[in-house]
Image (cartoon, rainbow, N blue to C red; front, top):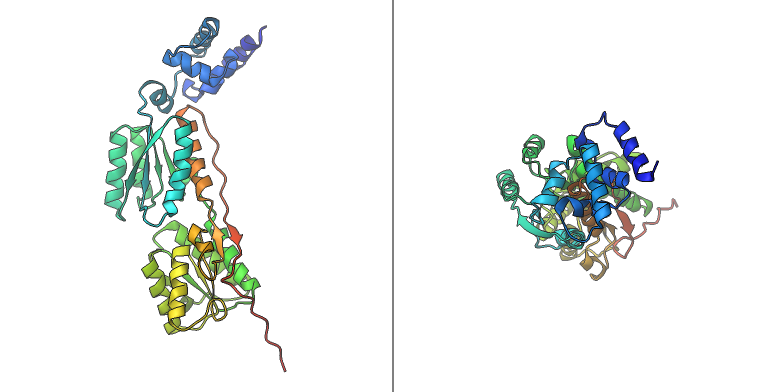
Amino acid sequence: MKPQQHNTAMLMGRKTMSNSELTIQDVAKAAGVSAATVSRVMTGSAGVNIKKAERVREVIQQLNYRPNPFARNLLQKSSRTIGVLVPQLEDGFYGKIITGIEHELSQAGFQIQISIIHGTVEQEAKALTNFLERQVDGVVLITDLLPEQMLLNFQKYQTPIVLLNRLIPEFAQHCIRLDNVEGGATATKYLLQKGHRRIAHITGLLERAGSRERLNGYVQALQEAGIARDDHLIVECDFSEEGGYAAMQRLLARTQFTAVFAGNDTMAVSAMQAARDAHLRIPEDISIIGFDDRSFSRYITPSLTTMHYPMLKMGAAAAQHLIAVLRGENPKPVPLFHASLIERQSVRQIEPKTKK
């Protein structure tokens, strides 16, 4: 028996599965060719050896292969366009993610359309609906305001959606996420290791999962060190420069502390300025650690200790996952990404007090 005949026989033996479970890779393996060759045969593209094309068509017929709706969209009526929904682009954080997305998509022959959401569920739902009704091939959704059930209802469009920075259990296979709990805990443990015990936390908006998770990591690290949560040390703000500045002012007015864990670098830098304006020195009087590792963080004085957020890699992973779905593959869930500590100059060691 020839190798391709053997492969076909093995797949035929698996035909208790529906043909929708077969992938273009199954057809390629059975025919002894590449998935790209199968794709060219199915789309009628030139450049395929006649004998190979005949073998591919024979295998397709034997297996009764029908590409799933996502793959069929790619092969037959693709717009070669991916929609990307983001909350904003002003501060550059999402720009890095989009750079990672765009690089991978362009390599695969896609272009992107970006829609900026300005903070309401209604706007996010409208923008997603516009993308899906415009028949983009797929969507990367970076915002996280839509209720879970509303988002699941969009599956009726049969357009693949990849979620970035969010987990919906029913959608877990298509979620690209950072372990924010671990990241928040790591930042807080670093301050604890430096001798700090009164550690404040400036959170992002707690309506967003990432902010809640970083807060949970902060609380977890304190509890492991035997330190109870103190809500006087926790201030919520909106990720902005103005918010970080005002949050530090509130902290300074109501309690004492030696260190601050800020939920992003933008808030951390503006909190540093608020401390200076109160005639406090960084890090001699107050140590500060941020989150994201934005490009400006290394150039300020003192340079900002922070948690590196792998924005480019996560954007690339979202695009790669979406491309795999569009090709009719069944990609495995993407493992959690991890933030890593970047030690710079904004945190100082506190020496333990010695008894006289």
